[in-house]
Length: 135
Image 1 (cartoon, rainbow, N blue to C red):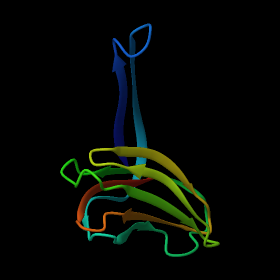
Image 2 (tube, rainbow, N blue to C red):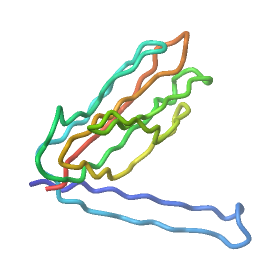
Image 3 (spheres, helix red, strand yellow):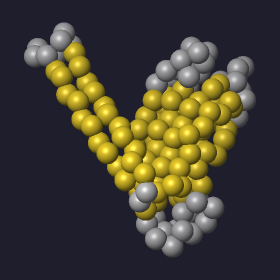
Image 4 (tube, rainbow, N blue to C red):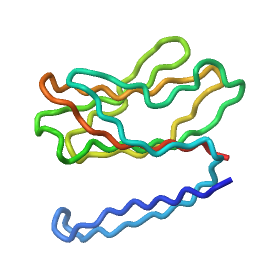
């Protein structure tokens, strides 16, 4: 087992009537079925970054972090899709250059596929991702 440490912080002194300073650290115990990678996706291309490749038998939680590189073209919009075992697909995020998401995903026993889609018609995009399954 390993520990995946994450911290999210929201801070602003001027956006709301009262200053906001919230920091939440979390330590998750994960097994060694994990990856940290960079992928370059061609213009109008897509890449499956996580798939259970069919039934896994038991439900599990997978932590997913995806970031669209800040250097991607300004008009690029990236969608992150999750497809369940029945073939139902949902867009869970649309990211602009520099945007990121971090979410826990409950993968049911029938499996799941997570895909990054580069909607840019003219340029490739760089994306960073981490996934780690709860131990």
